[in-house]
Length: 91
Image (tube, rainbow, N blue to C red):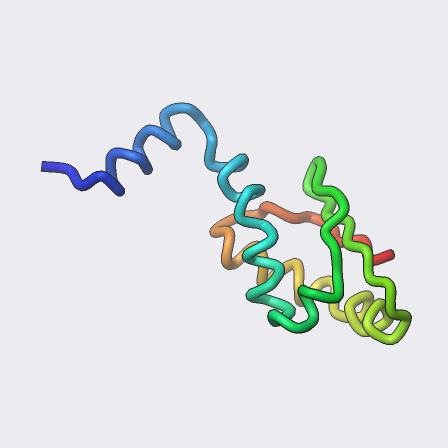
């Protein structure tokens, strides 16, 4: 007998919704990678075609996150279980 979790996972896969599910989890992944305090100071503006655009109003944090873009991208992709993000743009 399958569990409800297994049934849902199968349904998501059958309907090719893995990408949409990962996109919906993106704010959670972002918070997990940058931390709760910093996530509260940033805003995910857009995610399209593998490009994540994040607004960071404070210059110091914007600089720090810009320098760590590749590290952040790799960590989020690891959490997502695949190549969800190919680029992060910090503005």
